[in-house]
Length: 199
Image 1 (cartoon, one colour):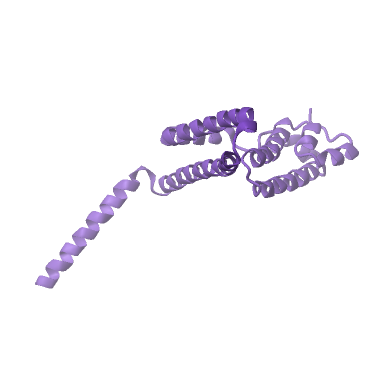
Image 2: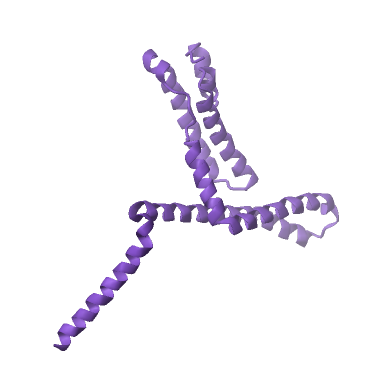
């Protein structure tokens, strides 16, 4: 049940992303904020991507002021506010399916490489004490940079899907036909210009 409850505990819980929303009864909102904040931190640690912590700070500030604005919202508006996820789950699912279909091979390669990295890390931990220093140095560099390369490939794939989707939104299914028609018209105009020059 949605309720503003104690102002003191609302303020205290506002410092933890998502907790104040859950305290007031907005479970989906709170879960979304909490998942984004801790997900970014987890990705930053696991993938050795320190700059991601900047995004975690942005998510924290957004969550804090979102909670405070929710608490100070007009009572009538508070009652009619719908508890929903901050992201459109259906759109995310459709985008994930599109990415999976179009870049199945790339995703498969990324998953295989991640699996190899995890297995390699486990094996390395078991035999680290008998390995020479040169092997340890190579492993450390590979373990540091390889996840970043994998993330970069994934970002490129997602960006390409977004660009293709924008083109389809602008031109529809006839985007390729428009290119072909434009080429034909251009060729035709060039032929006409050549004919006029000859005359």
